Amino acid sequence: MKLSQSQVKTLASQGFLVLPERFSEKEVALLRSQVPALLKENHPGNVIEKEPGWKFGEGAGKSWGKDSDVVRTAMGLHLRNEVFNTLVHHPKLIAPGFQVRPEPMYIQQVKVNVKAAFSGSVWQWHYDFATHHKEDGVPRPLALNLHIFLDDVSHYNGPLYFVPGSHRHGEHGARLDDQTTSYPLWVVENDVVETLVNQNGIQAATGKKGTMLIFYDTLLHGSPNNMSPWDRSIFSLILNPVSNAYQKSHRPDYKHHRDLTPITMAEPNCLESFYELAESK
Ligand code: SIN
Ligand code: MN
Image (tube, rainbow, N blue to C red):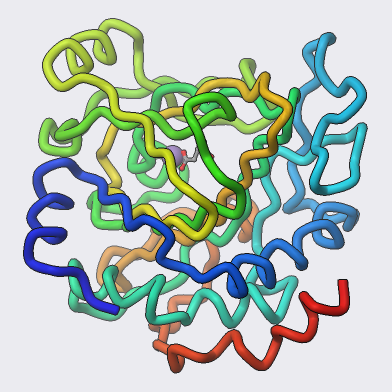
C-alpha cells in the first residue's frame, strides 16, 4: 500500500502523483453504486451547477440519471454514507498520506466532484491552500488532497490540469471568485498562471477508473468544462495534520469538518463486506 522511493521523489518534485488503477473494478463499482442516491438527496452539501444557458440539455449527468439540477459537488460524504465512511480509512487511499506526513491527521473534506457530461463546468486555476488559509485559517500548506477517479478520465471530459513543480513556488496570491461558478473559490490571476505555465508546462491527469492522485496544497491546478458526452466524477479526501488545524469556522462543516480526531487506518479488505450493495443495483 506504500509508495516506492521513486514515487515519493516524483511527488516531491512534481507536487502530484498519479497511481494508475490503484482501486479495483469491484471497489470502484461499489463506490459508483452509492453516488446516484447521494446526488438525489436534498442536502446542503450538494452544490448544484450554475446554469449558463446552453447546459443541462438532454443527457447531462448520464450515469447518474439526472437531466436537470446537475450536482457539481457532493460534500460531507463520510457522514452521509457508510461506504464512503469506510473508504476514508482505506489503506490504499491514506497510507501514502501518512508516508508523506507521518503525524496525526484529521478529515478536512470528503466529496465527489461530479463534472457531469455536457454540463460539468470549470474549476478555475487555483491552489487549495488559498481557500484553506483565507476561509478556514489553516496556518500552513500541509494538507494533502487524495483523489480516486470514479469514471475514466481523458483529455476530453474535464481532467485536472496540474502545473508540475508549482508547489515549490510557495503561495501564488489569490482572489475570491464567487461569480464564475456556483462554488466560491480563491483563484490565481492569469499573469501568475502564465509565468508558472511558461516555466513548467501543464500536465493533464488522465487514467482509467480507480486511478488515484495525490497532490500538495500549493500546487497550481484547475480543470476545464466537460463538453463531452462522458461523465467525469472524482472522489476527493483532504487530510490535514491536527497540529495545523483550522482556526476559523464560518464555512459550513461539510467544507471543512470540525472533528479533529486523528484518522485511523482500516484493513485492506474493509470494503468487501459492502460488495453485495453494488451487485444488487
Ligand atoms: C476538479 O474536480 O476538477 C477540481 C478538483 C480540485 O480542485 O481539487
Ligand atoms: Mn483544488
